[in-house]
Length: 267
Ligand code: E4P
Image 1 (cartoon, protein in one colour):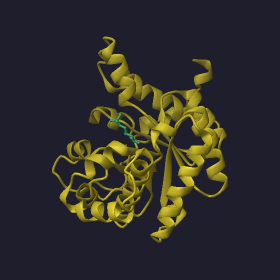
Image 2: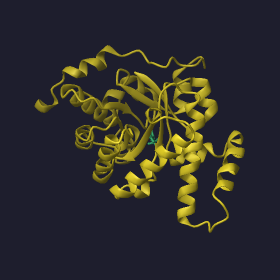
Image 3: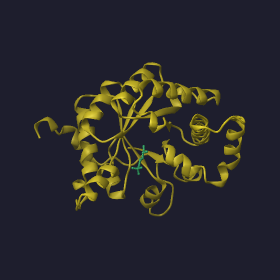
């Protein structure tokens, strides 16, 4: 299992030395508070000129900032950095395609090749159509906000490079309605990723499965063996009990690999 850091915090990435990194607008906003990014933010704002600071200005500035931070991260990870398309575009295929191309162009201007980045797009029907177009242009996509096997199957059929099935947000939904899973294996978010992983392997889909949105290390341990897992610095810290950097790969759990053999069509 490749370890991915779910953060824009450059110090955390230096410390945990992950294979890849994922960001989203709230992680970029959090990272933007860090002192080491202040000069970079100032540069982005100045490059945007003195025009009216309207919604469009803000969206462009936020995209540029996400790419600037992504470019810094890409100097530290050997693999890929995910940069997210503004979620407000999630039901507009053409707008997501345009934004995905724009993000890829901004990275290219900074000398970062297409194969070092993933455009993170919501797994709405419109988002999956946008990803299909971008993938054909060689712009790889990470389909996020994915909560179901149906979304996962549609992403694989669209030849998405990677999906991010969420764990914690599924658990949150059930907990808010009174559920109390006793073990990680009873966690509905964990069960969702296992079902998706199992279905993908049975159908030989090439799309990478990266579990995301974790609430505790029990969920992560239950999913060790999945293709990739993206993990917050707080949980990476808990996992590396002695605060040493984690290896870029977690050892695969044989029990999890056995899920390949499950036939969920019969269950
Ligand atoms: C990663 O791709 C997601 O943006 C992230 O894991 C979401 O986690 P959250 O549910 O804690 O916001």
